[in-house]
Image (cartoon, rainbow, N blue to C red; front, side, top):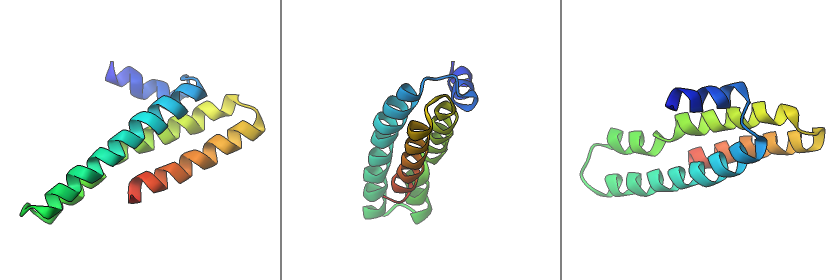
Length: 99
């Protein structure tokens, strides 16, 4: 099931709306915010700094996957939507990684 989820995004077989709105904007953003909150709690405690960094960066593989999924799914869209989705996905990946 997880393997199929990953493969579908890499292959670009998921509709652009699904991978953009559900996978990236909803799930990805919730994961990024949650990991940031937990990382801040880890940093505030007396846990090792490396653990806080690990928690903070833990959603990165998922974020890269859904960004790739948006990129591939956008191939089927009109040029305007393709470019808009790709630019938004890259900006979202940067924001989700550093915020």
